[in-house]
Length: 246
Image 1 (tube, helix red, strand yellow):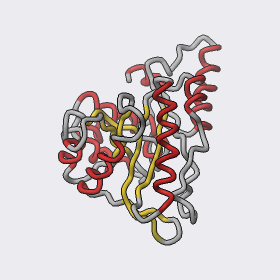
Image 2 (cartoon, rainbow, N blue to C red):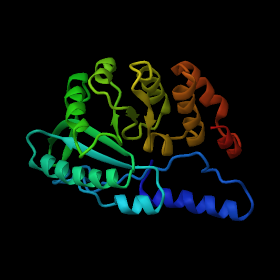
Image 3 (cartoon, rainbow, N blue to C red):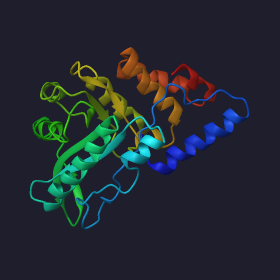
C-alpha cells in the first residue's frame, strides 16, 4: 500500500528487471493505492479529505488490487459528513468495478487548527466500525482498516467485516508495531492481517524488507512478537531474492 508515485516506482523497477530476463517480484503480490491525500496534517481544513490520487477507474486500468480510503470522524466538524458522502460515492464506483475497498475510519477530534487527535479506544473504534460498515451500496467488497488497541477482541466482535490492522505514522522503530500486530492477530477470526505503509517503507534505520518479512511471519505463521523481532534481526540486510519466499 502506497501513494501513486511509490507504486509506479515499484512497477517501473519490476518492468526493467523483467525486460532483462529476471523473474517479476510482483507475482502473487498485492498493490493498493492510497486515494485521498487532501487532508493535510496541520491544515485548517484537514477534515476535508477528498480523493486527489488514484480514482476507481484508474485503479481498474492499472490492475491494482483495490483502493484504500481514509475518513476521520469528528462529530463536531462539518467536513466529516462531506468527506463521508464523497467517499461513499467513490466506494460505489469501486463496487461497480468489483474492486476491493480498504476503508480506514478513524475516530477523534480535530483540534488546534487542523491537528487531528486520534481516539484509539475500543469504545470509539466499535462505534466507528459500525458507521463505516454501512458506507457504500454494498459491503461485499469492503475491508476495514483499524488500529490495534487494548480491548481489540470487542472491536473484532462489533462487525462481521474482515479487519486489517494499520500501522499509522512511522515510529522509526518497528518493534512496537510488531508487538501490536502479534497481539491483534489473536483478537478474533475476522482479524485477517495488516495493511501497512509508512512503518514498513520508512522504519527508521531498519531494513524495510526485514520488517515486511517479520510482519508476514506474524500474520501467516502466528509468530509471537519475540519470535518476529528475532526473525527481523536475522533477516536484516539479506539479499533481495528472499522476496521470492514471501
